[in-house]
Length: 313
Image 1 (cartoon, rainbow, N blue to C red):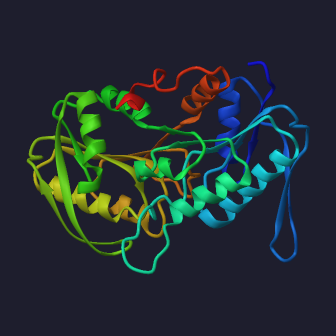
Image 2: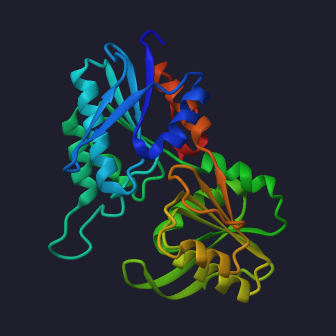
């Protein structure tokens, strides 16, 4: 590490940024934010970043303000002569808008990629993008990491007798098969009919869950409608237990209430997004050591794919 390394946090991700810096062996560097009366905001760094490898840590949820704050921080670092700027986006907002699902709508994920590139960022680091192809929207390197590095070990430590991995929908089947291979288990897939965004119709399970300890794998849990309906259906179908492992705990609306009322055994999430409530059914695993180790590989010019097994999938 020839150049100085500095970590700065956006307002939304200070909870995680300090843990990442500490896991790296550093303290979180100081930054400030001025908010003007009309709602404009102006971030600034309280120390020099000239010639430094700067890591700006910000999950973009809620997306709009936090994304624009990150863009301004990148611009400020660029204009202050940082040698290299990496946007560490544990949760990448707008990732669900990766294609046109109907006429006359934007491809927001591509627009976000364009904005980040135009702001002067040199590298993006993120975890479990909703769609892998978003990596191709960028003109700069993207380190796409996978929470399976954390979740697989945690699932193994449960010592479940009759483990089976479940995908909550057809689109997540690839992710489920990766986990199943790593855990030497079978797979079942849920089929859902979604009437519109955040509203779930009928759910069916393709496969036998009777007597099984089911682990549902997904990149995010938003309103928890799909997850809780699937869990209740699986318990009614004879499953011994049902757990959810979802990287990004958006948990909006009535999500916590749904979880508390459902038959799900446990939901395990990471701290890519700050929790707003507590629930006995929700357990959190930190991605801070995971990201710190990856950042060390970046600043040391070491291979990331050989550092983590799931990046070779």
